[in-house]
Length: 259
Image 1 (cartoon, rainbow, N blue to C red):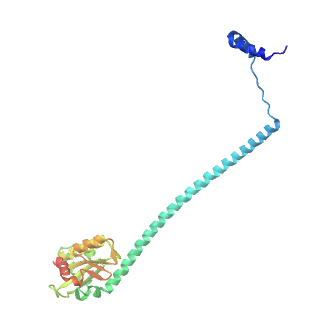
Image 2 (image 1 turned 180 degrees about the horizontal axis):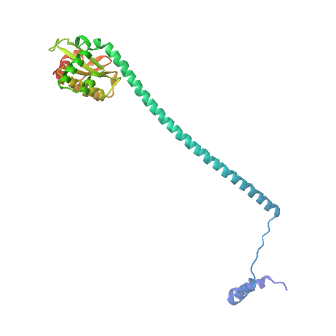
Image 3 (image 1 turned 60 degrees about the vertical axis):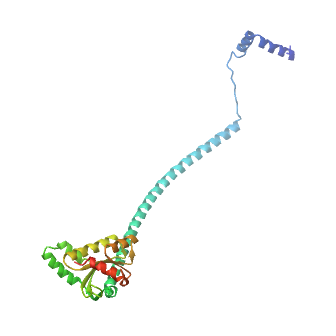
């Protein structure tokens, strides 16, 4: 006998109204495990297997590429490290070259100032001449008297220029004066210190020596100001400061070093 719509509705109401009947029906219906078998088309599975195989191949290739990339990265790091070392060496070489060029320029300027000493210092001194022999004799005497040490003699005689003459005019006119100086392309503090120290040694021996520094420029403007305050003559491109136009100030500088 076929079930009608009314029969099903009555069954549903019965299940709602009778929990015991509902429980008994559930046990009856689900007494055996429910097995669902899914069958996939064979050709579709073949396609899946083929794609999986290609994917495995692609993954393998990718792993090789990653390994190669790591090797290349390692090589690149080594190359960068070598390049850094080469750049560091190049910087050192450039620094050495700059220092050598600076030294060479200073030597050229030193020779030029020796050649033109009469012109440069002619505004101060008459009968200008090289003072090396005069100073050497004075230092020998002072050394024998115990006034200076041999090392100090060597230090003074290593000056870039020793020049002497008689003062051209003013209150010290016709007195003998020695100029002792250091020449560098760019004047630095050490140049000023060496010139001052050498003049101080000569002053101890009774020689009237005035320090000077000469070059094409200063490492900074403050050094120039400090040098003038310490009564050091400053020669830039052959021009002396204090200048002849500032004769009173120039005389004060000369007087400071008079023994």
